[in-house]
Structures are given as C-alpha cells and as structure tokens.
Image 1 (cartoon, rainbow, N blue to C red):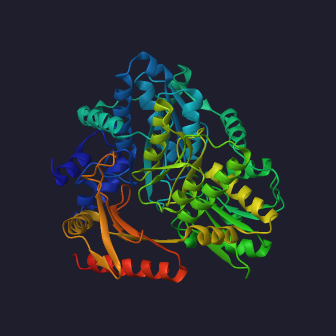
Image 2: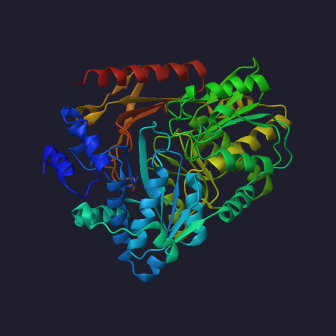
Image 3: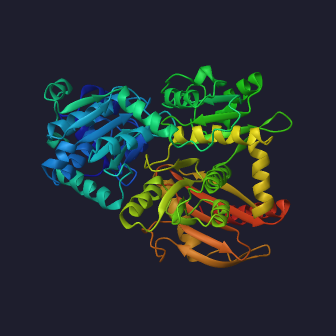
Length: 563
C-alpha cells in the first residue's frame, strides 16, 4: 500500500478507534502531513522506536506500540517456556501516554503467556536496567523519549544482561513484527485479568531501596566537604526522588531543588526542550543557584539517564561543563581514587564512543587502564561490559560518551544519571576540601595533558526531503574528503560502513589530522539531524580554540553548499 492507501485503510477499518479516526480526518486536506505519517512504518532498531505521538504508521501510538510488543513477544516465545517465565520488566517516564503505552505493553506480553513486572509509577531508565539484572528477566522495556521535545515518545528494549538490544535481537524482533501482518493479529489481555492470573506483577519500592543501596556502594571518598551547596533540577522528569534520595543518604544536606521543575510535567512548560546539554535548560537552576550561592548545579534529563552540571567560577558566575569535560573529570577522579586505594584491576578498561574526545583516554593511559572505543550509544558501550563478562579480557570500570552519558561500575548496564549525580557531587565536595573547584581541576588536567577542545554541531533536517539531503551530505564527505585545513593535514580516514575496527557497520565518517585533531560526521540514529563532532588538540589554549574554528568553517562551508 502507498501512503494514501494506508491512510484510507486507517480511516475505514473497524479496528482503529474513533479518536484515531477523528485525528486523521482533521488532516484530510494536508497531504504533506499524511505523507509524513504514513510514508513508512516507525522504524524499529537497536534504539527501539522513537517518534512523534499521533495517529499513523510513522507515529508513536497504541497500535504501533502493541505491534512492536507482539514482535518482542514472538522473539521471547521462540526461546521457550523458561524465557517466558523469566518475563519482562517494564518502566515508563513522565511523558504523554507513557503509562498507557506501558500498560499496553504489559497486556500484550501477558496475552502471549509472558510474565510481566510493571513499575507502579514513573521510574528512571537506569533503574530498569538494574531491575532486569536483579530479577533475572529475559528482557525489559522502557517507555521514554529521553530528552526529546514534548510531542515525542519512545519504546526502548533491553535484553537479559540489562543493556539495550544489539542488532541481532533488534533484527529478530523486526522480522517478527513484519511477519505479524495486520494490527488485528496482535494479542491482548485485560490488565485486571493479567493481574488476577499473576501474569502481571507490580514492582514497588523494594527495588528502589536495593538500587539506592547499591548506588551508594559505588562511593569513592568520605573525606569530603559535605556542606557544599547543590542546586538540582530533574527538568520535571523521573530523577527527582532517586537523585535527591541518594544525595541525602550520602550526607549532602544542602540540596535545593528547582521548584518549578520538581514535579512531573509532560509538557516541560518551563524548559521546552528538556535536554540538559542545552544551556537554556539551566535557566531556572542558575537563578536558584545565585540565590543560594550554590557550588554546583546538576540537571538530569526526563528519564534520568543523562546528567549535566555547571560550576561556579571565581567571579560567582556559573560555567557549564560539557560531556567530554565532565567525562574526563570523572575518569581522573575515579582512577586517581582507585589508584590511591590500590583497587584498579590489572586489566581495567574504560569504554567510550568513537565521537567522544580523547582526553579521558590520555588520563587512563597514565593509570595503565585501557580505553576501548565503540559506536555511539550505551547499547554499544555496555555491550562491551557484557563481552568482558564472557571473555575476561578486560574488567569494565566505567563508560561514557560526549552526549552527557556516564556509568560507573556494573550494577547498571546503561548510562545512569543517579550514579553520575552522586559522583559529580562527591567529586565537587572532594576537591572543595582541597580548596579547588571542578574548573580548577579541569585546568590542571589541561596543563598536564594538553588542551583538548571540542564543538558539536547539530543540523536539523526534518521530513523526507531532510533525510534525502542528509544522504547527499554523507555521500559528499565520503567521496571527496577535505584534505587540508590550515596547517593540519589529513592523515587517516575511518569509514565505519567499511572499516576494520571490529565495530558493527555504521554510517559514520571520521577524519584524523596530523596534529591529533579530528572531526566526525554522522546522521543521528534517533532524531532528524546530521551531527558534526569537532575535536582539537594543542599544547596552547588559544591555538586549540583556533583549530576548532578552522575545522568548523571548512565542514560547514561544505555542508551549506549541498542543497
């Protein structure tokens, strides 16, 4: 069927409810909107699904969620009765329809004879990963669109190790989805029936309590200044209770929560785009920080897997640390603390993505800790932790990526804003006891290892035309790379569609220059964007900054020339 046939089928079929049909009737004269909603099916991949909420095959709605869940159910059933009995844990965030989508997921799984553990309220995404490992489930699902705008939602699938599915499981689920055919072939069981049959079970505070205790066990220092003042914003998401609790139980009593962003708000009224990578997300936190004279500002995204921070400088102004800087600080803090205690394993490794900067790698080398690089996404980063469990080749210490995702230890196999918030607060308190801020420590790191600077450029190109232009941009860089930028000469190219690094194939291009600077370009896997990651390295601060500008101009001139 073409997009118009699909549209008319949804309007005429008795399977779709009246609210759905009313929504579709309202766009009858908008062919562009009909095309966008029906030209394809919402893609199911290693990140699960993510898209705008609404009626249509290319939207997040109860029908696309139920179809994906039937595909997951078939995948689990193929593994036998034991897998079905182990079951699936389900969590959800604060977004519109998150609870409804979670309940639909539970009802479809139960109808297929698969046991379900459904959280009784909103929870942070990393807690789902923890729960899978704790309960020994075969899989897990979290309903979240992470830091996307309010009109999005998503469906992320995890496997038994507690990490997001990789290509093999994703392809199996997708094949099963495609084999289902019509939506009417999806099985449903009433939620109450599932509860009565003990196929659906609610998870309460007992898992929260165990998680918080295990998070606290990851603390590295007690000789710290616990009187530091911290302003925290959960950006109206799931981090509010667990982050506040772990900070309180670690002895941080001067924690002030941004009141306007404390409680769940699926419209993210005070922030719009709830991504703490965006400095605008800190507007309210900065205001409260100045009022309380806070040392540290912390923000977690709506599903509390990402965390960003700002630090007060000597002028009393707040300076944002980007993901690479925070990651490097955490690498130094964790490894120096464990070196002091003699607890760095002989085969210890940190894992970072291929578009994350190399400063953490330089620090890890000093402590004889290996750095392993993976494709972007914590499914790949924690996939390495799973590999290490089997091979014993390395011991996973921590993983991080430039997009403000970090995890320490192995209790969670995903980025974790609760663990990271605790460590950032602890790190700040540790250095304050020594008379230093995080900015002071970062400057010491730069003086020792060199000035590693970076810039991320995200170009939003929506719709079918946007996707076609992204393809043309990638083709241009692939076929005709930029050879020289200023005094920097191109030394090495990695095309991850055709590389020999051992990573899965991915549409990423990476260009290394002879001075250690580099840039990478890739389409986003979850948003209609093409991203350019620019990294410079120099012994001199200004020279490193100038290199960023030169690479930015060369790459953007090329991109803007491609229409």
